[in-house]
Image 1 (cartoon, helix red, strand yellow):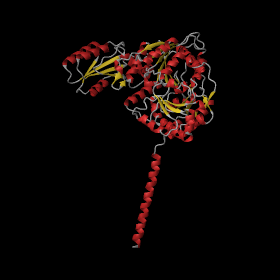
Image 2 (image 1 turned 60 degrees about the vertical axis):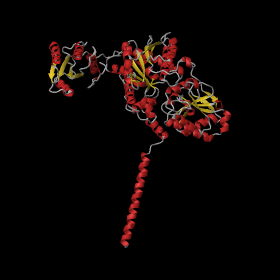
Image 3 (image 1 turned 90 degrees about the vertical axis):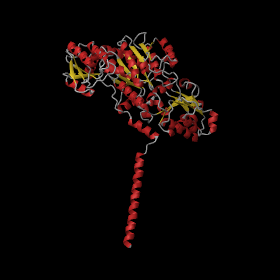
Image 4 (image 1 turned 180 degrees about the horizontal axis):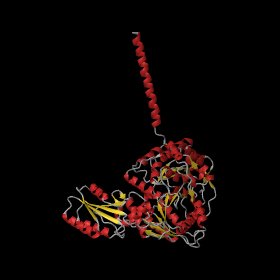
Length: 620
């Protein structure tokens, strides 16, 4: 009996010990697997992309070019700027940035006499009101406006096919090849993909400098918002944007932070052999601000009546942080102080009305019920116009283009900016302590309290680089790069050597008319076939006699080779053709297509220039 009681006590103790052990492991692994807060994830992202590589500023690159090539050229550069999208209602629109660049470059730069650079702006040809307004704005600046007319093939079920749109831009550039020294493409949607690929493969634009200006690829925007890639279409756009950036002659990033993020993600930015990654914010035209750099200026906190949150407002960490900061600010102040000062908080850039049944609208309405500051959502006035009013202080904490910060700096608008994503690099070092806040609701609430109720003046920050110096840098860089390109001699692919390629064709669709058209397109190539291209045709066991007769005619006339397959399987037929080849390069051709006259020459040139083992093409 005593033994049984001892055994039972031992058994209970063992069970209790196992239960405590399981509880400990559940708590430990649950803590390890628990997702970190939005603020923690934001800090982690900032730390992960801490500056590890210093990219060349535009000013230093100008000095390096001038050291190698002497003084600036006396002839203006021929510049083409592609504007794929333009919306003058949004502060951060990439089209506005490129329109500003066009105006700056068309102004007379130092050392080029009385004329500015010869600037052409290529618009998408949408015939929208915004596009007409942009045309009217650019023409007085002696900017030539050209318009791309997209073909009907650029549309598909879900909208515009980014690959087809990129090809349309390539065709326009190909038609205007050698008319420009420098071409600027935006990163957006990778519309420069085919143009940049053509130069990388040595096919076109060998005497043209191709530049991509990036303010934040979509992959960066998704990573910054903590989102996964939303579907196959977004993955295609990510690929086009990354390849455009990796194959450019120059990548101009808005910040060291963004350039380092791309390196951290495994992107191969251009480096060496005449290809560079530079850092410089986009310029502001002279007619939007004073020519001289603004001096430090302060305004009383009592003069602020509207705190404006600017940017894309979506449900991710930044919007939650803004609402949390307003919750904290509510606990610091009294409603009498708000009414006495006439304060309110405004959200601009939100494409909904407060009466509209929207998830985001309902979220803001629910969160604002606890705030002392009245809520206002501006949906009628454009953001650029709304923030110009008296008594505005802008808060930039959501994922926005750095150009939003640059616009507020140029217009001398008081603002608070999140210290992350490279935005702080654009602000003068002496003004960063009072302008930047860490990515936390508590720090933003304290900054708002100090600015609005701390009886202190609100500082209007200055840009890190005076605006007039920025304009001069961009003008001078174009002059120097254009001269450097003219003095350099790009390598031109040598003509293909004899017996370079075997063209393999398996007849799986016995259509005599289509086959005859294909054969004639092969014969009509602008590359001599004799001694250069070997043609092997594989016929299936069930190929009709009239197709045999057609093939025999071309085999006898042009010394091609015909192979009879034992079955009709396409894969086996192409394998037989490859085994019959005597060349190192094999090109497989579908039997229902016709080849462009320059198809074989382009494929051979691309292979020689890139030394790629596999080349695919669906437009030849």
